[in-house]
Length: 478
Image (cartoon, rainbow, N blue to C red):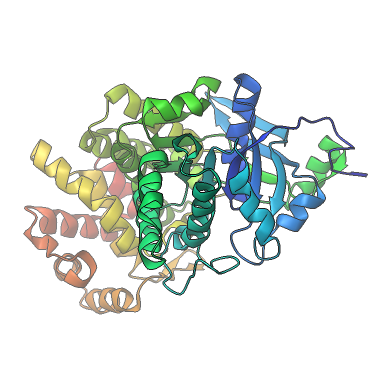
């Protein structure tokens, strides 16, 4: 089988206009795929140079294949099964700044460079005061980027047209603001001149973004089948779900320069990322958190089984459409479309998403993903959301431990939470369990017994689950 490179396959070469910090699976399955589509469907005509953000990485593997790799997208798209394999050709080369620092800095000298995109993990956007301007390179990602920006400023003598559009994809809320703050800290630490500070502030834009696509990575279980389909040896095949969403908090001028939304892609340029962040956490992560214990205690093992089960599937829809959706402020049609897309993702036949993996740290997850919706629903409707409370009862029951058939139930959470639940359940009194869980301020930062009616409803649900079993308890609220 032939090696994958630009000699052995038909592909395009693009002018280098994008600097990408990170060579991992997510960026290649998400951002580079979006750039590839935008090149094909608009006049964007932009190539990517990948910068390896840490000293050990995959740039050598990437360069060995001339930046080429195949992307296998799988899932449900508008009710239709998709299992596609495409050659992605937008990466022109990779640079390791730890061994090629001069080559890295030369990126700043290219007048055509316009975009900086990154995914250096949530820990990547952090200020490290040990970094110095003279380092080759600075250890932190914001430090490396500040070095590059300062060299560009000096190279083009502060030309305002040579600023960068910077789009971080790290999974932290307000990632753009956090990255900008780090750069400003390096400007202060390194005592860089006021002219550079003004150029960075006025000529560069650091924008908040929200990214969403599940990327399992290298498809070890199906790689032989994929290699047979493509007919070349590719060591960097990456697998992802068909669903994708990129929300960019940026003005229309950025959308004009990066016309991904004109390529038929789910890329949104919006005034505020916040409602979309809330939508994702509420309508994807929120249902995940409560369906998992409810489904597991009903004898189901995967998210797909849960949404396709007659009873638990109806429960999931109740939580999503009748409860959590009512707490959001985006247009109803937009929320319904997103929720239906989420259900398609949940029932993806190509992904086995085990509910036990989602139940790791269920209490902190419920606090951030479901509790805000519970409070807003109560405020707006005057009653508690039965499905969400039943989900909390499922979590509390799961943390009791014991067995489900032949399987031992082993909750995985903070030791103090595990100990609290074990102690409460030893009382054998569901009312004491409900009061003790809701009153644990070290979990919630407040006493949830103060929420009107919550203690009574949670205790009733716990008793119902103990008497009837999980699935029959769920039937009572449908």
